[in-house]
Amino acid sequence: MGIEAIYRKPNTSKPAPGHKVYPYLLRRLAVTQPNQVWAIDITYIPMARGFVYLAAVVDWFSRRMLAWRVSISMDVSFCIEALEEALGKYGAPEIFNSDQASQFTSMAFTGLLRDNGIAISMDGRGAWRDNVFVERLWRSIKYEEVYLRAYDAVSDARTLIGKYLAFYNSGRPHSNLDRMTPDEACFNALMPIPAAA
Image (cartoon, rainbow, N blue to C red; front, side, top):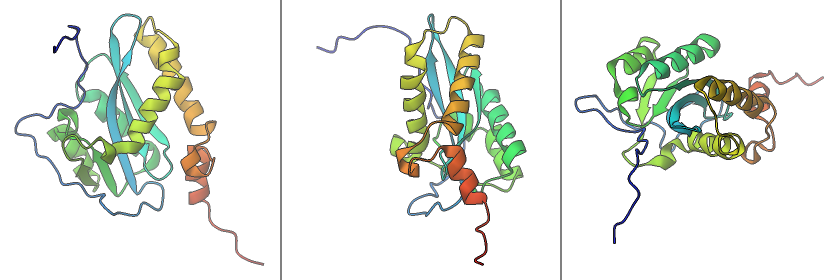
């Protein structure tokens, strides 16, 4: 009958007319080391009243969350802040992947990537599987943290999400990482192999 509730629905992946869309570079690419490919995405975080947005930059190889920001609006600035933090801490990846949301196709965002010599990759429209590692992060954070609480204030959301993401990186083993944490997967890959005696 087409009956549905009338309420504000979060939509985090709206493209902007006139923004350049870049080709997808990850098809059949073997990701073999940290900082080879990073990805970003935005999700909504429900609160006791309303919701906020969470943007996170993730390393594809280790599933490590490199930087994140919570915002009350969908303005590009919180995505740029997360990207700048990740670049400041870890240097530049070879490839940066995102969907075609207006934040990621904006001149400010793509300009920052180009200025750092990073190849830009974008998922095809409606191809959620292309950014599956970030989607898995969203599922984990929502089921293991967000849905267990009803944040009263944005500051509560920031504090508790920050604690969860620190745990996610350093204390939560992943089956796809041979039961290592993202920190262990990243640092083990970066450590030199000891020479044979």
